[in-house]
Image (tube, rainbow, N blue to C red):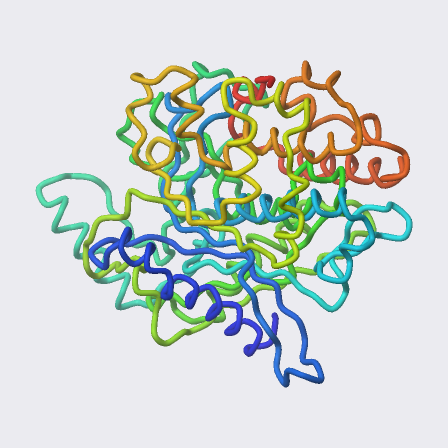
Length: 483
């Protein structure tokens, strides 16, 4: 595990970001709870600084996700508003701006950037003296949330349940494990259609079996169309440890970007910090080895840590005091000083004008590449705060309230960066999913990449999803849009 000093430094950096944000304090009152997450970059001591330094690159809050009936086939909503997922998407925005600067300035960008050009692939790689960390204010839902609770906590939970269920004749049992916050899945068809029936969920006892891939939790009494298909955060973090944080499209410019550590805050109900950390490491690291989800020869660099912080996160979930969860989800990306120097070159390309269509290209460039204010989403709809009901909006109205982190806008950012030097209008007819699956060398100049590097990327992805054949996720139906 990372040193205690580093883990605490990561946690305190994100907590301080939240505590000093006036908007966060106002929009998420103390009467509500939420989950906080952030991507932090650390660097070791230098001649001018005696200790490690920590900077928050992206941060988010949130604890909800969309049901099937709220998904959008045009890529205009954010399906998963859990904090760690939003923080990672906010970090994607950071990478797109970095890619744009490098496309414009080339090697001159290296002096100010955390990244440098890889000597062989010519893609960007994190400089060796920097490390990336993921902080989450509680255990990610899914496998990491299965850890033993103290006996007194279990007894209290049993008493509370019996009080609620008095008069019922159900068979009760004592379960010493914390509930996962996600539902275990049997193998499913990869191309599940929107109306397809979900397999019968495992009973609550076997649902706590460790190592399973799970979809996110939700009320089990909801109609089928309102239940989510998003995978648990434990599964998603494990995926990032296998494939990198950057996703498929950004592999055009980046080598896989891996986490050095995942840090969470101690659950005071857990039997011990050690047991909680064992569950976290199992879920996001050792499962990859046990399932053979890593390409042969791949070194897993991520470690895990559970820390005790004082003061605690003020909006944390309190299992002893019932308070509502926040209906808002915030996302934020830092702005690097050297990015402002590129303001004059961020002009809409002809390709971007075609890609935007329903949205003014200049407006998109401002929102995605120049606006670094906090963005608040209504987690139950996946649109920005203030949006009308989805049923009352046409696609033009949806464009105006779509998050900058929605798939459609991330795809627009991809085209804008790619088209700085090359005309790629021919790829606009490609569907989003097809573009993600393409071998990137086929749509990029030879000087930016080598076929060997991209073949390795494909092999990683094939190995991971072959090992996680119980991965469900959002159906391909919702990834078939074009610009």
